[in-house]
Image (cartoon, rainbow, N blue to C red; front, side, top):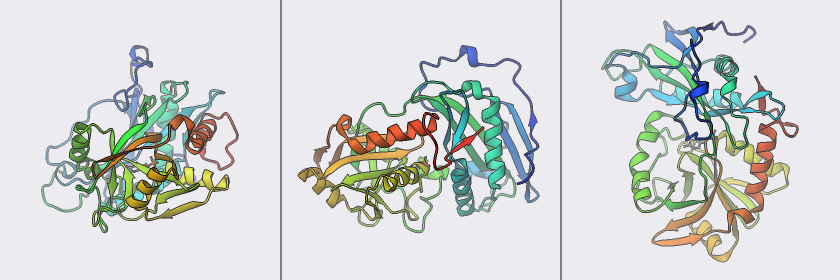
Length: 354
Ligand SMILES: *Cc1c(COP(=O)(O)O)cnc(C)c1O
């Protein structure tokens, strides 16, 4: 898009900043002063607005609620050491936003509208970005169907919105994970690769059970045989096995993470052999037994790099090397932080400056 987006801005009468406790920021509970809203009707996006964060009135018949025409994205803005503000790789999220939209029979949102809506909101609420290590502004763009119609058919009207809020570290300790061999998150031909709301609702019961059994997270496996690794909860999963970085190749069942791409890019740059392929449970557990599995972690925007401390499978618990001794994931996290907080150069152009 050559022109900037024409956004009508209505500011809050009084900011909630002063009453917000920045020393206590559990994920997803604190929201900034404003939000972005746009409407889709008659085949086009219109009414671009930034308004005070708050409730929205909707018909109880909207198809998002009944048939799940609803999906989201997740990305972060960072405050640099020199006070500048950037959003990390937003065009990657913009492209994935449209992949999700396509799969759910929802309208495409031009990538520039996606990025400019975020940049405008982040700029207005930039005082909400904590200037602290491991802290950022989590940004949640989403789209949902608003036709007040109970027929099972694609809606003709939609809302696109962006909300955001300050956040600190997501997982604070190494994860104890269970390899899930009963439930499935996604199947071939399904929509696991989309950030569709329904994928996360369906994942809640299996996770709840895993938590009751004493685990922090679960590793999803393929829906057919439960023999291959897919994802770690809502993050991509990676293993350093025999010195090589190994991760499941993306397909219908796997969300193609921006963090995943970022980590693989850095690993290749550093000369690691990177393998994107099917990763069997058997080879990972064998590596855990014989010591060739030296690192294992989840990679995602919310979780960043989340080390796996222990893995359970078939009644056996495998303990992995002490996360504080892991060369690879520590180096990735350090490098990522240095780029995102503007401590070092950004040779890949990953920071979108606001
Ligand atoms: C969002 C998400 C990821 C991570 O993607 P990022 O772009 O790195 O945040 C991985 N898996 C699932 C299922 C997700 O929803």
